[in-house]
Length: 105
Image 1 (cartoon, rainbow, N blue to C red):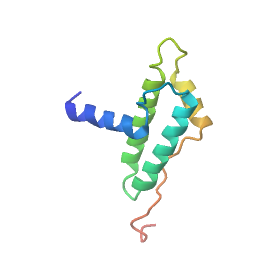
Image 2 (image 1 turned 30 degrees about the vertical axis):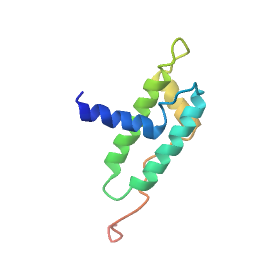
Image 3 (image 1 turned 180 degrees about the vertical axis):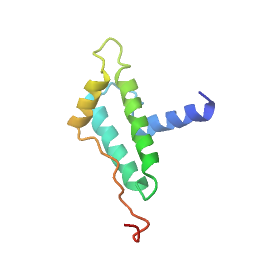
Image 4 (image 1 turned 135 degrees about the horizontal axis):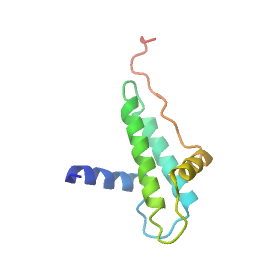
């Protein structure tokens, strides 16, 4: 992985709030990540940007999976368990919020 890609993921970690100094409960991490993802989607979910928003959402999910499984000997998450947890916090879906081309049908 090249340097720019690593820095992008680190910036995403900080933006989502996954790198914190003190121990945090998983449900608090999920809630915080949900709020930050929803803010990002509100800003960037515009016409013709759906695929990038989906990529961003997927990247946040993979980082959540990684960081929730980095808690030492504590119980880890498998993908189905993480998907259930995301459903529990009502994980936001990508929906176009701002249509920049109102003439399109």
